[in-house]
Image (cartoon, rainbow, N blue to C red; front, side, top):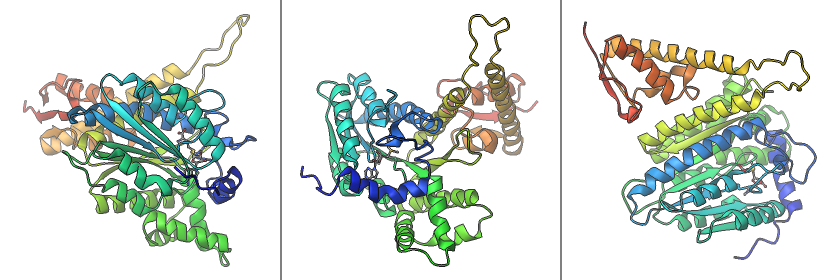
Length: 415
Ligand SMILES: C[S@@+](CC[C@H](N)C(=O)[O-])C[C@H]1O[C@@H](n2cnc3c(N)ncnc32)[C@H](O)[C@@H]1O
């Protein structure tokens, strides 16, 4: 493969400088002195996306390839990064390489990675050489995502495809994302999913350029790019009429997701990711799937990721052995109270649904049962706990079991 000679670190850095300026923090990960500051240490926000990927992707691999004759599927990482962080923690490529190895007896996970920055690409390649098991099929490309997305889709062929799009800034165009989701595939079902990192600050700041009385040439270019990424200029009106930048970004993310749905028929789930320092999300993870199980599992994975994120943000207090009164860790009790509150909230929603409709049908009712307070926070365990209370009370039958809960059909039992 001939590499684009212009893709030196310096050139990429300058092409990206606008993205950096937009995202302020690269996807919620602080910029501090390093060749690529993103990879110095794993900040809370990255803990979230990696836990989500680590939880969800094996489910996708397990389910989608189970009915493929060759048990093959493809993973594509369009903005792969260095593979691992300087503090040794795994980036998305290394996490997936572990899945390739761990599932090798059951699934053939072929991988395709794209990384534009040469120094990151070199590191990535080395990491993959070491981490990929013998016999694994993988390819790493040095270049821009847009130049390789089509090739990545050909690489997947007719296999199920999961694409992770994780840029610093605005990312691929609307047509590119829709094109992936609409790829033709021989075989049963579409089996094509995209997980997209929608960087809040990048969209928030770029959007602010429309208010500028005399935008610079660079800003005009960025605005044009934003139109391409979002699939038209519709977002400008949304931005100008919103009460705050955060509200605008949320509405734009939802508008984008809806437009992709209209174009592809994919359902979507939007997961807000905050970090300690920000009250508003620093990025949104946006997942597209055509399968009901995908919607169920991504919510479960988001809840697991949120739990991992809380643990990361609440390390136990440091006390040394000579402390007369070691500090107690308040986190476990807080967490238990939080989770108990979720079960109460879901129980209220379930009670309302049961009395108004006379039945509960999962997964179509899952979103209503979780409600905005616990959606993406609580998981299956809490849902089952809440439904079990109604069953014990004698108003819901049959008994909800953990196994197959996503298919549960319950009805009101009249006293
Ligand atoms: C947020 S980091 C990726 C992190 C990685 N996915 C992970 O989870 O470990 C974004 C990466 O995209 C690279 N990049 C920036 N613009 C790109 C482009 N147009 N195409 C491909 N990669 C790009 C950057 O050099 C950086 O390594």
